[in-house]
Structures are given as structure tokens and as C-alpha cells.
Length: 614
Image (cartoon, rainbow, N blue to C red; front, side, top):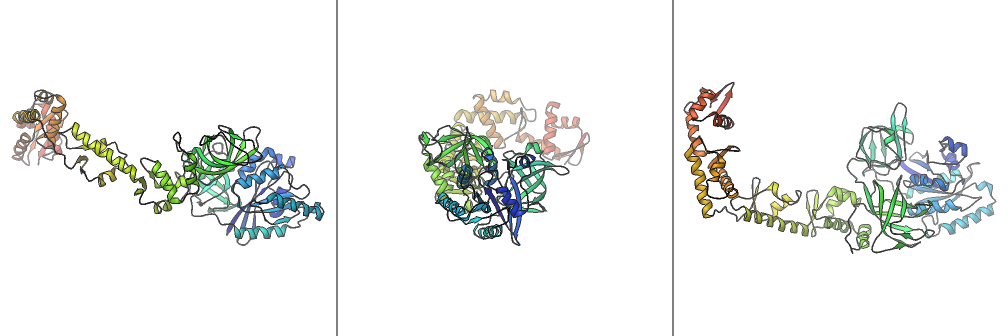
């Protein structure tokens, strides 16, 4: 089944809603105020099974200038534009504004529908056609079929349906294999079901029981049920009008402009770099001008920042800009947007999203050169640019999100000369070389400051954790032993007074047997200052000449070996704490830590209040 979303556009009272009702039998004006006033205020939706293999969803938009923001929330996801012009009025102000909006949003396919054609003489109809040919020249509607219809008599409706069917053959199908993205255009509560949201599924597919994230929040929801074109289904595909019954969110917490998508796939942004076209009817757009930003179903207040010392963008021209959004939004490279003047609210321009990374531009850097690569460069050029801008590198999933590329494409188009891929992490070879030099310097400095230590613990290294395995693997001057990193040429060396202190410390504990002196006292009498004395102590502990049982309790290994033999002579017997004290010849102060040690070493095993000697 092929799914197509068709949207209307045109001036108020040109018959858009009547046209959709004549085609589908569905009245898209659902609000009481719409019926009372006889005008469309908000988005309306209908559907038609046009052929056995083609289903068309219709988005009917309001034509009144006061409701353009509602029109913008619906027109962004359409595949085919039904550009509606009343034959008895021809081109009017909102005809022009809707046309410019559709052009700026990048809509590529359309039909020109001449409604109320029964109300005019054929000669007048021909004049309207000529006017529209001139009006659409050079645009995506140039040469589009012009179809006179009458919603009142039904004349021309069959021809319009055939034209929609023919257009569908030329329109590429939306990707069903990508990441699902559903911009929400309605959210409400339905008795017995709870929260329901609706939208046009732009990409991917959604199944019942799927878990989705509500962007720009971090909250997740579960899809309890769904409908496609008003009918219950188990899944929705790209291009379908979809209603989701979601669990985990109250209706008051969901509103138009939010997006449902795969959890954690996208990142929201408030800094958006764009290519912007300013309409010739607008006034010059100045730096820091406030605007209304429209993308997808969202409307957000924003501020325009101009690049490269520009003071303004002139009417009818284009340029690179940064839009600073008041609220974060899910936006992706290639998305189209519209900006409207802050006050009075009129459409003044639009363009394409180029970068959502929030890159910080250095003073004097040419933003245009960077954005030109991100806009029209090859995938390899765009990947290389973002990776080289990231000193620590960047993950493949994040790159794919920023560049709107499949992750496998990022993995397979890595420029091998410039970049290095470490599993799902990309780093510039030049940056890795810089980190390697810093890494070696840190290890050398550690050896200089701590000549008696074998090396620096991995946890003390200042290099990025994601790059450390590669630095350890590829730096030939480095050796790794367990958790210790050292230069291969490093050897522990002692000065003369340190060698004397080493002997003094070891002798003090060896001669004491199991009745060892206080550690602080031994270090104080070693003949060197405390810091170096403790380094000597660490050396003796690493060499296993001494064994540390607690913060202040150190034994010589010979004393412990001798006690091990004494215990072994009574193997298989049980010994109480008092007997243990007598056998070791120590006070309770030493006996308890010593007992815990022999238990850990499995020389004994605790059984109630006694120990079994093993």
C-alpha cells in the first residue's frame, strides 16, 4: 500500500475545505467555532482510498492571515500540494503568502486546483490560468497541471483524482527503514483511552508497545494503541496520518510542536545554523532581529544572528545565519523552516537547517566557509570537518545525528588518511598525535617527581578516557603492568640516603617480629623526610618485603612466614583467640588484625568463636 499526504494551500474562502469534503466525504472543520463562522481556523484531516494500492491523507489548512501559524503546522509534512485558487477571485494575498511558504519549505510536487470554476465564464477561467502561469513561472509549480473543479457540482473531481494518482507515481516514497519521527500537531484526552496524539509520520515505522521519547523532553512514553487514517492498526509507516494512544504522559504535558521519536537518537538544540532566503517583500533583516521560527509543527520565538560581519540581509537575497531559539527543539540537517516578522506577524523568509551542533565560532573565523561544506560537501568532507573540530573526537551515533546520515554510512565513509576510527569513535590523527605527546610528557613528569614508584596509575592519567586504550596500545615508549603505566626504560632508582632509609625501615620491622613498632615512628627515624620515607615504604611493600595489614600496622614478610610455620605445626586443630595471642606472642591490639589476615590468606578458617588451622 502506497501512502501519500496531500495538503491544501490558498486564500481564505477559496474552497479548500469544500474541495476536501467533495473528494473524501469528510468535513475537516471539526471545531464549533469553524462551523459557526464558516471558516477554517485549525488544521483538518481526511483520507481517501484512491486506488486499491494508493491511500491519500489530506491536510486541510486555514487560509485566513490570522491563522497562518496553524497552516504552517500542517503543511511541512506533505508530499503533494493542492494549490487552491478560486476561479472567481484568482490570486489574492494569502495565495501569495501560502505559495511563498510552500516554496521555502522545499515542497517539490503540486497541482493547481481552480475551484468554483462553475461560477465563471470559460473566458474568465482562461485568464485566471494565464495569470497563474505567470505567477508560478520559475517555481516548483511551473508547468503543474491546472484542474478546474466545482465542489458544488462535482465537475472536474474525477480528473483531479486521476491527476493525484499520476503525481503519486512521480513522488519518491518516504523511507520506512529510518528512525521514526512524528511531529505532533494535536494532543488531547479520549475517554477510556487517555492521552492521544496525532501527526504525519515522516520517517520509519511505529509499532504498538514501542517505547518512544517525547522531544524536547527526556521523558519516554509507551504506544498502547494506534490508528492509521482513522482505522485501528498494529503499526504505522512513513507517510501515514497517525494517531497514537500513549501511556506515561498526561495530555497537559504534550502540545503541538513536540516530536515523538526513538529514545536518545536525536539531540535537541537552541542554536541552529541555517541557509536563509529573505523574501523580496520583506524589509532588511538585521543582526539580533527577533522572529517567529516555524519548523515541523513547532512555533518558537527566536533571534537572528548574522555571520561574517554582516549587518543585514537584503530583501530578495540569502545568506548564512544562526537562529537562537528561546526553547530547545528537535531539528535535523536538511529540515526546512519559515521565519515570520515578530510584529506585525508576516512571513519574511525561510530556508534549510544546516547544523544543529551549536558550534562555537572563533573570532575572525568565516562561518560561511564551514557551513558551505556542511551544506553541500561530500559525506566524507562533512564528517572530516566535524571530527577535526572535536579535539577528543566524536562518536559515530552523534555524527550520524548531526549530519542526518545513517550510522553505517558514517562508518564506511571515514577518510582513512585524516581520521582514525576506534570502534564507534572517530578522532583526527593530528589530535591523537597531540594527545600522545601530552600522554608521554605526563608519564615522564611522573617518573621525575616519583623516581621510587614504578609508574602512574591509569586513573591518574589526564587523557580522555575514550582515547586512552588507543594511546596505551599504540605508544611504543609505554609499558603497562596491571593498572600501572610507565616508560619502558624506567627503573626505580634510590639515592644514597634513600638506600640507607630502605635498610633502616626494613630492619626495624624484621627485628620486631610480630610485635611491630608504630609505622609513623619507623618512618620518622628513617633519616629522610616523610614524603620520601613513604615512597621507600611503598617500594618495600611492592617488593613484598613488608606486608601492610592496616593503616598503621606493617609486618615483615619473614615474621609472617615464621608464624605460618608455627600454625602449620598445629594443622587440623582448633585455636581460640586467647591461644592465638599466646602462640603469636602479641597483645589483642595486634592479634585481631593478624587473625583477620590469616583468615583472608586461608591459613585458618573461622568456626564460631574458634579458628580451624588449615
